[in-house]
Structure formats: structure tokens, C-alpha cells
Image 1 (cartoon, rainbow, N blue to C red):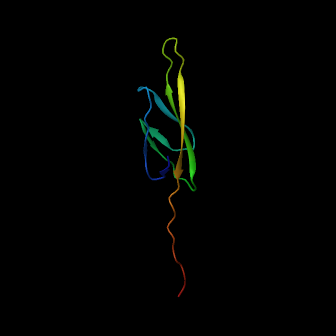
Image 2 (cartoon, rainbow, N blue to C red):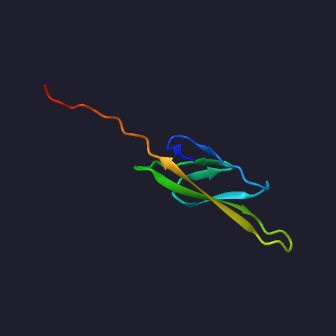
Image 3 (cartoon, rainbow, N blue to C red):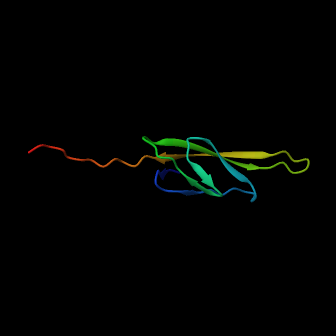
Length: 81
């Protein structure tokens, strides 16, 4: 699903206890909240949820991709009178 560049996105992974990281597209993650970077055009972002290895079980990852939509710029009329 898409978000606007001035919104945040709650990240939910299962099972609990994993960590989120950014694979591509920029922005930042604090805990389970993704905050997009300022973008000039619509940008695809991929984030990864990682569950650490546990005993004989290997680490596992899952990637999620969504779009950050650029905010439209304000238009200005600079016509001379």
C-alpha cells in the first residue's frame, strides 16, 4: 500500500521479536515505525523483517515493498500586471 512522504507507516512482523531494516528507497525506521525520506517523485521502498537465528534454526527474512508518494508542490502564479 502507498503512503505520502509526510506520513509514517507502522510495521508489523510475525513472529514478534524481529528487527526491521531498509533494503532500498531511503527513509528511516525507529522501532516499528517507518518514516519516509523527502522524495521528488513516487518512490518504491523495500523494508526487511529479520528473525535472528535460534539454536539450529537459521535466521529468516521477509521483504515488503510499498510506494512513497511525493507531495505535490504548491503552484504559484507570478504573472506581472
